Image (cartoon, rainbow over all chains, first blue to last red; front, top):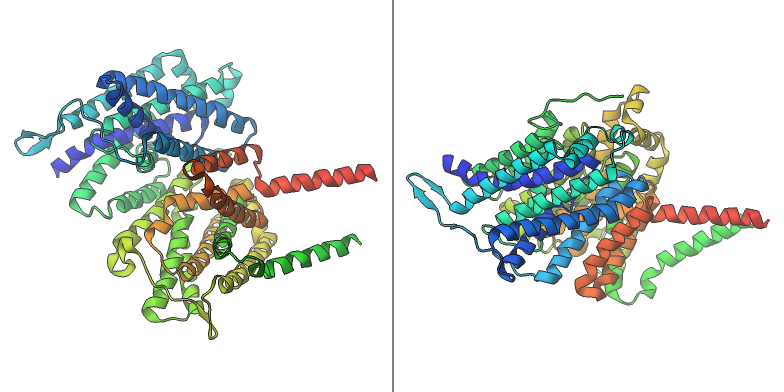
Amino acid sequence: MLQFILNGLPIGAIYALVALSYSFIYAASSVLNWAQGDMVMFGAYVGFTLYQVFNLGFTPALFISMAVVALVGVLIQYSILRPLRQRKAPPINVIIATLGVSIIIRNVALMIWGPDAQLLPSPVSTKPVATGILNITPQNILIVVVGLLLMIIFQYLLKQTKEGKALRAVAQDRYAAMIMGIDTERADRVAFAISAALGAAAGILIAPIFFITFNMGAGIGLKGFVAAVVGGLGSVPGSIAGGFFIGIIEAVVGGQISSGYRDAITFVLLILVLWLRPSGLFLKKKGQKV
Amino acid sequence: MKKNKKIFLMIAVCVLILTLPLYINNLYYLHIINLAGIYTLVTIGLNLLSGYTGQTSMGQAGFFAVGTYVSALMMMNFNFPFLVAIIIGTVATAACGLIISIPAMKLSGPYLVLATVGFGEITRLVLLNWTPVTKGAAGLTGIPYPEIFGLKITSEGQFFYLILIFVILGTYIAVRLAKSKIGRTFSAIREDDLAAEAMGVPVNYYKIAAFVISAMFAGLAGGLFGAFSGVASPDNFTFDDSVAFLCMSVIGGNRTILGGIVGAFVLTIISELLRVFQGTRLIIYGFILIFTVIYMPNGLVGIMDNIKKNYRKNNKINE
């Protein structure tokens, strides 16, 4: 049992990063970005190319890939979300637009990198280190440590920098922030950049234990979204807690109950959470204002 | 004079549709049209739910799957006649709609979207893993051809008329529903459910009704799909299929029943036409989706309405 919980931690860290990326965008601009999972895939592929073709080390590959994918995020906000907002498009149109982006990114990746699955060599060993009863692999430790470090860095940036403060103001009340002279479009772009970068980081971290394919984003993206909603969409601690929660639940259910029904049980749990605590497991209930 | 012209035009369109299989010699084209007809039923139901009531569903493929599997299994395992099987399938799907509507009626926005995605995924995973009944990943094969009052329907041309009857029936019911008190209540809930509640509308009952109705449309379409294609596997009912249904609904225009019909046909035909582009096909498809939702926020039907309005305005000026 303890072993399964331990196995759930690295995948939980990945889900937490993806959940955070959904939350940042949703908090800033109330947009549900379905292309977020594909940022994970794109980041993994860019990292893979830098690592294999340009022979860069793991750390520079991680940061360059995060920067490249952040640019893609900004491009999406600028060319698609901004015109939609200007036209006051209904939320369902925004969802369809991001689904269109997801289809485009996925198929562009298929054209560039082909249909074969790729594996990024791990900078550390993926062989388990025997520690008595429990098995721990250095790669899993790396995922959890780097994941947590990134979360702390972004949390710090959000609290301390001017851009971060603007983003938090917009998240709290978009209209009031606009009146106070905050450039809300710029805050949106920052949110998209951060989210894309977090997704890319998740992609590179998971690449050594998970094959990179052009459609890997669908599964990870959906699970990350589930984690964000279970923890509390739009909340930083909620998303992180939700990510680890879903990761551990999956590992335990997959190992102890049934691997075929693992995802189904996750979704049943999700619907139960939505039914009983619509604002997420780890957030206080909010009343509706008229 | 003007009224006569309109009636004449309508008769011409009806005759054209009724005799369509006579002109189309390529069976593949007819197959695509039949498929679009089946999808039309799903999108009409989805429009009543997401366009009229404002409850976005991204799990419509789940209802479609339940309809397909239940009616196909009724025919295969219990030898029920086609019409009885399809009714049982529709009722079973309605039951699923009722179950999912209970958590869904309290939700909105991304939460509702995710709950419906969850329902679609649960359905697909159950179909995949409940091997003794659903045959797992291999799926059902040899679903019998429909037989109605001794008439066996086997060819694409015969299926065309069978599907046409159901589409006309479905459209009639949906239009009557949309124009009734129920349809107007749905729109009131979409615009402001709190205000509707304050006016004494039992909002939750109407939300449940919308879910059940849209599930029934998808279930009926599923029953037709199983008999039409003869095979069904969990791969036919993925998240991507739910997304495709939602795209049809929004691209066509989700606030009218006509929009559902237009969207289903246009997107089904476009994605077939794009096959010539092979690798770049889906990239172009993605750009079409983005372009449409930015520049035609009310879908293709909205654009048609705008053209009509401008035309009338110009006529008035000329007079």
